Image (cartoon, rainbow, N blue to C red; front, side, top):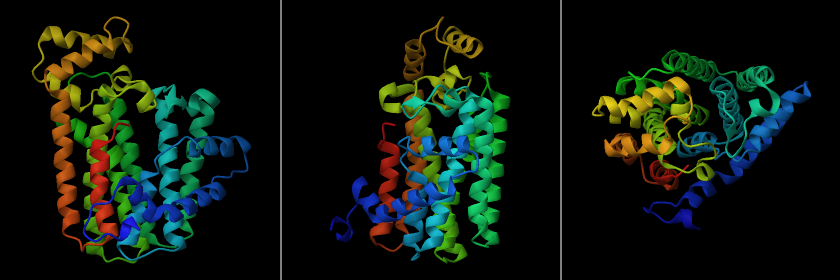
Length: 333
């Protein structure tokens, strides 16, 4: 098999081949655990599960667990936990952002309404913790509680900054940390814990995944400007339309003229591109190097993640983690 080639980088397909059976078990676990006594909650959970997500977070947890020498039921259950937590955050984010689409389909809040989706997201959160609680591991719960607090605080901070043009690079990095990188890091740490790894291994894998998550979100922010709706699964330019000033725009605004800033201010105020088309904003961002600088910043996090992985012993799982960094920075959605 391709995964037995010593010392060679694996392809994306080969990465997922390493944990394909485990991912299938995670899917089955979610099928079981996402059944609620209220049918609507179950229906929303199924809708999210069938929406075509990449399952990157549980795959990361599984790869880290395998790398650390572990497997078994605990790893599968924790894989389901992180995917359910991720789904809960997506439901809540779409309500807060008044999103219309998610992964190329109508978002859950469009299908079932805000009130129902907030409660369904709450249920998914609590059910994820219920599953985690069965492991009777305080460290697992500590990681999950800390993660949830970080993500909620990140959402609150983002809400406070909605519509503001004076966002800094440090502001952006804080949100990327709280909303994305901390979840990646927690996935890696949970994989290590489930495998019985020591604290040093857990922290190293967590640091690797944190850098991976930072790069992932920065590329995501860049793709919001440069991708196409059919590829991205949601409208391009959606962040600015929702009042969010992300890193590509922050970099561009550093050298933009007052005349070039005015269209951005107008979109932030009007929350649409009726007065100023998105193409004008994109041209300004590209002209001032916002896209290129964001890619370079993401690459710095990717390079750090690779440095950490390079310290690990060579095996198929180590090479898979290394290749994940390429998948994150070279993706188009």
